[in-house]
Image (cartoon, rainbow, N blue to C red; front, top):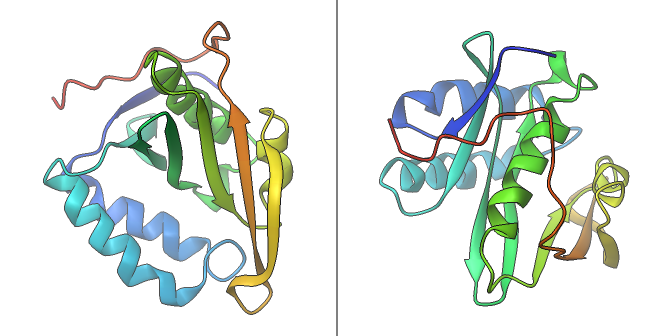
Length: 167
């Protein structure tokens, strides 16, 4: 898929990111998670947390971030609009986030909490299952805790480097 751009989240992206979230309820997110996500986006607009959006043909179609905790990082709130799932955009967004983390020499591992619906996707990136909590996100939505030992020599291809300038 061409015409892909990854850039830093801006406050004007909030409606598009919330629409992506809403389109993924209840299969990928529990409805009660929406206020947490909306609050997280408010923090991101203030520069509190790093968050990226992926645009295809100028439209926000995916979003996801990361948090740093010493030598460990955590992927946060990653999602791809339902209508473009399976097109490689989720792979591009995840690769962009992992590349940012690989560029940070102190980060040794990346963690994620995801559901049974996307655990296989992250396993293809090399994430290992640490623990599974049945109904951990809500009824029928199991929480899979996963980790990836970061190899700083691996690089992705196919997507330009994220624009993290904030412009």
